Every structure is written in structure tokens, then in C-alpha cells.
Length: 318
Image (cartoon, rainbow, N blue to C red; front, side, top):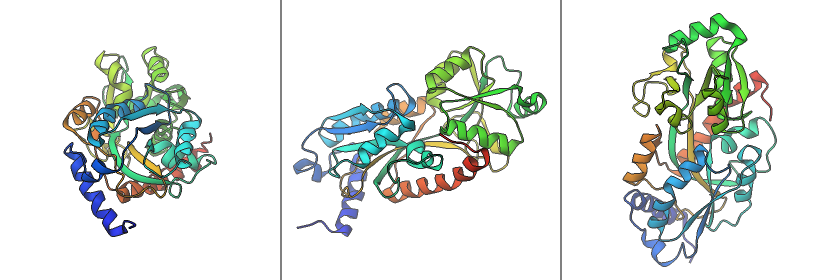
């Protein structure tokens, strides 16, 4: 007999609770999954999305009682791998570890071969992290207020890096320029690693990064964080003020989560929140955060609404 929508919602709640405790849901014991699950990362290995996907890989495997294989399908700002999953069978064996880019903002800048809200089924967020304003260790700006004064004085002579044209770090930089009345010059790089290398080499005077991208250089003392993109100071990145303290209304955070092809049943849930995963996230200034499918869908819609005006104002294209 076909599972009713009400029953599926009940199973979803039970599965989320069980997964959060690291237990194996009863429905998984006798049915799904009975073969390995592929979790597609739509970026190259080593980046922030890939790091988080691999951080939860083992916990997912143990929780679901089946092998979870992380597979990288990079290209076109994350849309190649995302489209691959959008066109996969809705059986729970092909998932995408998505984020703000291909699931909310890339389509604001160019046509993509899928509809984020119609062709993919949100499952749950996994983690969220603020975008962080970072500067080289030898920057004359010691505080956010210092940086704003420094940037206004030097006009368009300062470079701000991003992990790629049209990326969230790029959009955040353009948003910052507009909101703070600055003219920082955007310099795109092909991913977080080359951007941070350029940062350490003195080619950039600022960048908006996640804690995953910046961790190594910050711990080595070559880069300093100044402020976070959350509306208020956050313990996720302790000791930093919010950019909104000096630039009212400013906010920018990156989310990561699991999505499936449309029509995937409710009972196929893949969010995990084990203590060891939370510890790994915290060390990289990332907050482990699960959600309902409805909450993730609302987050995607909200991001489209926030970044659409920024894309149009700055005429960002990919």
C-alpha cells in the first residue's frame, strides 16, 4: 500500500530524531537503503563543500547502515553536478551536497538546466557559516572601523578576492561595496585554495571567506579576521563583531545541505548531527545545523530574494 503523505511526515520526524542521535531508523533496517548511496559534490575535491560532505560521510554510512560514496562532479559553478542529481531517479540513492551557489544564486546570473525549487527536493541543511571579512596579517586595519576608513581613503586601489565570479564571496563583496559606499576591486580566483594563496602572497587587501577556506592561514598568522556577516556577533566565530555594527542591515552566510531529485519520498532522510561531526565543524567556524525540508526550501527562496537585487545592481554575469 502506498505510504500516505501524513505517514511520510511522521516517518520524516522520527528519522530526523533517530539520525540526530546516531541511531538506525526502523524503516532503514528492512528496506532503504539496500545498496550504496552516492552523494554528489558539485565541486572539485578539497574545497569547503567537499570538506563538509566528507566530514559527515562516515556518520551517514553508520547511521544508514550502508556505504555512502562521495563523488565529485565539478563545473559551471556547481550546476553540472546539481543537474546530474536533478535528473537522477528519485530513489534516494543519488543525492547532492548543495549550497547557496547552484541551489539559490547561480540562476540569478545565467540560465541553468534545472529549476532549483521544482526539480530538486530539499532534505535538510547540514551546516551554516557566516561569511567573514578577512585581511592580510600586515594590513593597517586592525578593526572593522579601521578597514572602512582605510578603504574609503584608498578608493579603488584595494583588491577584494573571491573564490570565483558569481560566487557567494563575490556577491558578498559587491554587497559590501554598495552598503558601505566603497569601491573595492573584485579579483576572482578558481576556488578557495588559489584565492588564499594570493591572499598570503600580498595580492589581495581583503576577502570574504568561510572559516573552512581561511582556517589554515589564520592559524598560521598570515591572515586576520575582522568581522562576521551574521546580524550580530556569533559564537561560531568568537571574538568578532558583526559587520552590521558599522554597516546597518548587512548579512551574509553560507549554508550547506542535502537535496534529492524531486518526488523522493519523505522517509529518505540523510541529515546527521553526531557529536564528532559538530566538533569538526566548530573547529572550522562552522555551525552544524539540521532543518526540515520546508525550512531549507524557505532558506533557498529567501536567498534568491536577498541576492537578486545585488546581482542586478552590480550587473554580475557568469
